[in-house]
Length: 500
Ligand SMILES: [Fe+2]
Ligand SMILES: [Fe+2]
Image (cartoon, protein in one colour):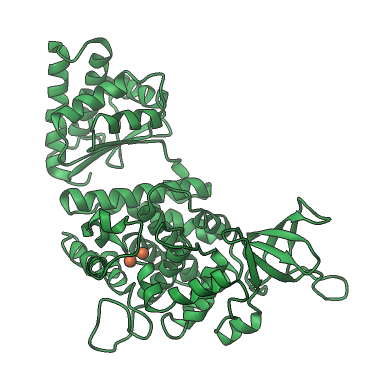
């Protein structure tokens, strides 16, 4: 068991785990039968509150998970004795019926929130976890979160679906941020397991997780962004043959790189217009904020130290411009240089209200190539382009055969970066998958990319050639004025700021 004032029984379970589960179940059962002013209900709620208070004093948060018909309290399996068995089974059944996989209670929870939570969940047998979460939100319950189940495979590092891995990452980023906001201390055990799951996933099936990182339809930009940066960074780290532990640390550092934004006012972060100089000053503080928040951790492990350096450096350019300003010209850490490239790519390819034109992933790749050597480490940019391909998943390509396709997978290692696998949407082979790296009987490529479509501005511009990549320069963005003007305007320092 981790820490705290609980005693361990000979079978490995702890008395506080057991009492916590018992009192929660009694409170839920009582709430199913009686109203709030009933004496039995009040007594049951008070008991649960006592148990929770004892537990939270030791650990800061309490998390109850239901996975594979097993209950976990703070990631420790609750091993029920004969006397507890029925309670554990009932609680599993109740959570399962409502689609709840986890309940997280964070420090600062009030008695009213506990009462609301118990009633909403106890009486929500016909509802799903999303509806219940909305009810809790409407009832102003802010310190108790419920979430759907995460597959065991995600947490044990086995290969599982990219969606499950991605959702587990979003949960962890949210948890890390909440923990810092509520009690300053981050709990790294769950984060570690998820980072290892990301590493395993990238090692076994990189393409599906990369494809998830190009979908930008999630509600909260910051969590979505942190997860995308982590996936992209690990994929680059893999090309550098980093070991699993280093890749896990890189993922962890990327999860935390923008942590300092918790101290930047929300109105500034979400302002739907360009920022004024004072607001930029606030934004520019976030790398230093991250460092200070991480330095407050009781346990400064190797991975936390690497995260501190990575978060400090992620807006410092390769030529030492950017921010925070550093006096001495020194070299940047490998983690810092990788996170900077991944951060830049994800930030500029995410639609933001203050931009007049949104950039496609292809625009993002072109930007990285154009910024390499000066702002970005050219070696990391080269590896990044190998990872994503010149035309990242989702890019719409026009071919010299007149066909049109959507990129499904980046080129396999060893293939030219401009020859991905595409799904044909127009042409004779409509509906089929075609690998542009396949040659015909004469050893020639039967199809070549001619155009990249940008659905945002209905225009297109000539594709960058492999020659441009070799020179590390990138082609002129081409004849679409809206793209060219905005692209140029946002390059350089101001573009770096947009990627904050
Ligand atoms: Fe960022
Ligand atoms: Fe940032």
